[in-house]
Amino acid sequence: MNRVNIQNLALEITNKCNLDCENCINKNEDNNITMSPEIIDSIFSQINKIDNLYIYGGEPTLVLNKLYYSAGKSEYIT
Image (cartoon, rainbow, N blue to C red):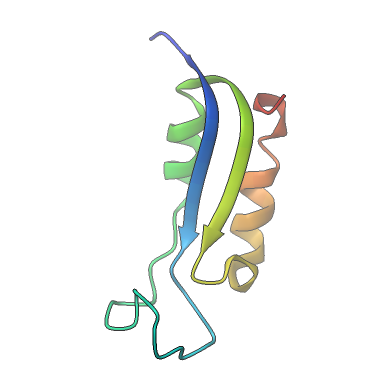
């Protein structure tokens, strides 16, 4: 498989949130979905190089293990 170079990659690692904002676009959705390590690995296995990695979600700090896991893929980030 050919691996690709990506300028910007945004990962929504979770949609869990500890707030209840009235204007939230995810307000009526299931707020218990978190990206698995297998999905994260699958994404990075297709990438050669990333210029910018953005990690977001509902509140990524609610799943620190996934946040650190994703950030730990820094060998791909230039």
